[in-house]
Length: 203
Ligand SMILES: C[S@@+](CC[C@H](N)C(=O)[O-])C[C@H]1O[C@@H](n2cnc3c(N)ncnc32)[C@H](O)[C@@H]1O
Image 1 (cartoon, helix red, strand yellow):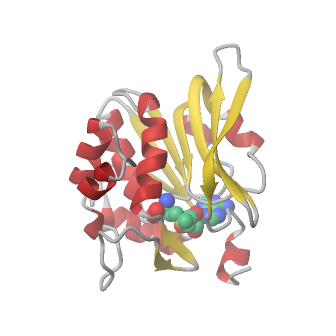
Image 2 (cartoon, rainbow, N blue to C red):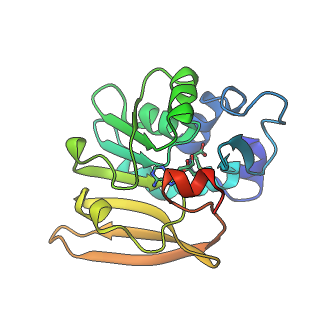
């Protein structure tokens, strides 16, 4: 899988390739699914594990902000796959927090990984461990949530899908003076960052 993503130019970073090799996706994909296929897969509760190329793209955009000792937040952590990758990056001196609003997914992701901290919580992030050097949001928000910008450290970066039917993967940098720069990386299609009830009703 990683070799394929390297061959097609999705992964250019050696470190990202190494970590994605280490965190075996087969441990995170529900039984009976082809774990290394480059496609999103249902994980129940109207949620998906994102496709490997999307994980790799977001991971690589955040790589500089996932150095040893740094702090990372994964909003909509689902299976915990990227949360585990971030934890390996920041190492024992760093801190990685995952937030996910479906308690059953939190429970199964905790079984998937041991090292990272996962909280049953929602789209407002996890202010207790802020500020973060890196924030990844795994579901599409209608706009960039101010609460997450607030939790970003100056010099920090957030990668977040934004939009409803048409979505862009936005790269949000908080500059050292606290101002914000936003650019669009690519068009994407994610499930919405929503309320738990709306998600379970599949709205
Ligand atoms: C496309 S899935 C990605 C999951 C994860 N990144 C992965 O690849 O395993 C989006 C996740 O965001 C979660 N989610 C949606 N809205 C949320 C909210 N308001 N707060 C927390 N999690 C949310 C969903 O339950 C789902 O697990």
